Image (cartoon, rainbow, N blue to C red; front, side, top):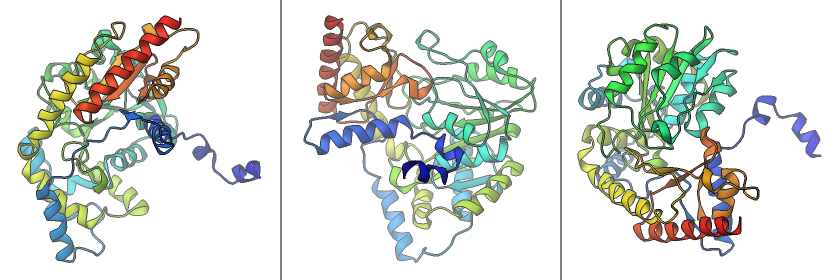
Length: 399
């Protein structure tokens, strides 16, 4: 019966895996429901509630009966507000017709992959990368090329690596800064180094995922599209989930040249149409407010970063770099690999038994690493660090 059922499912779906972040969250949730004490550091979700001013705007939208079909690319006043945000925060000039609002930044990226990638086209995805980039590229027939940058490179590829990854078949470069999972951020100078390579290859589009833009510590955020010659070939992706703790509202957006925005609108019109009307009303308040009203979140993440890093110091064989943005530690755990635990996934399963859920680096394109989210309460982070150290030391002594 199972075999018969699979015959009706397309090969593209059968080849598509669930993101490892979701898989680990499911495992930890099942253990919690069974009565086990599990601290989950696996999901990339702020543990704050949506700010009151955004909630009030959503409530006002309900009261004013924004409950009918909306334009596919988003309400005109929201797209105008996003243009204001891009100019204010990023120095980027867009017209409302160059803005597409989607049901989360993930849909934005899916739209872009479908709009840009033909079967056989190559998509450069520097590792470590967010879990869905590669799956979405392959889902539309793309071939993933993944230059790797580990802890020794601060998780950032060099211009030479980018040049080496490019071929006549290259169509797209996609990356995030601040990066998920590492928290690494490309400086303006580092982005210019990559842009200098890209200017020699005019066939390549760039998808710049800037969803963690407001969560940074030691480096100022710079948009790739702000560099000379890059606006015309870059889609700048952002959304409300991380900076405004609005994960459940499901609203992402992009700014891109009109030819690409039009293509994404066409795709979206066939798949979901416009995103939630109420979420769009809340989004207007959020993007116009900017980062100042949510500065308390960044301050809290700064403190939590220090707590988790300090707590992991006793696991002295972990390679740890202070992230410059986002809310993750991406640690090199390769020194703890052994015959009994040969992969980071094995280490994560041991950590789960020890009471902490995390995500192995294989999900992000780098074996031997583990991602811990510190979007959690301070006391939970202290307890989690103790459990991580105890588990890893136990593995070390057993081997």
